[in-house]
Image 1 (cartoon, rainbow, N blue to C red):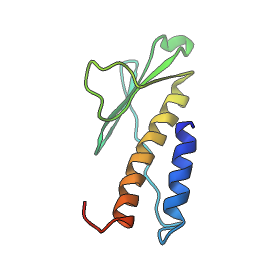
Image 2 (spheres, rainbow, N blue to C red):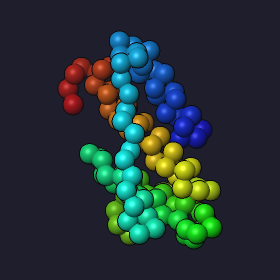
Image 3 (tube, one colour):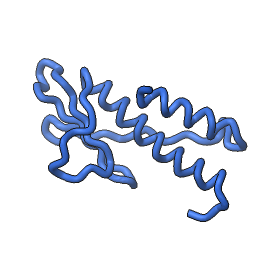
Image 4 (cartoon, rainbow, N blue to C red):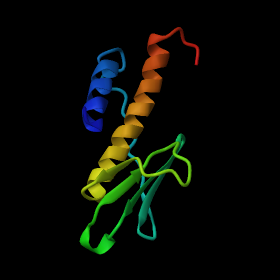
Amino acid sequence: MSAPERIGLIQDDFLDGMWAGRVRVRPLEWRSIGRDRVAKTMIGEYVVSLDVFQVGGTAYLWVAGQVDGDDHHSEHENMQAAKAAAQADYEARILAALRALEQGDGKP
């Protein structure tokens, strides 16, 4: 199951409850650092790097929580696909945390 499919299932499950239509995860805000695009979040940084920027080569994604020096998390056809995967990962993490609090006993 792809990341966008997983986020869809999590959103459906979470939003069917009392928060339906009232909750949305903010989109990641990307900034350029050389050939990389970086989005800083409360859970860490997402980084997308292209191997050959001028021809739109493979985009490599590092997700929040990866340590410097770790191999990339995933490879994508282009920058847009890598950013979409990063957004799906971010939304899944945020919604999963909210869902756990809502369905649990209220303790973090």
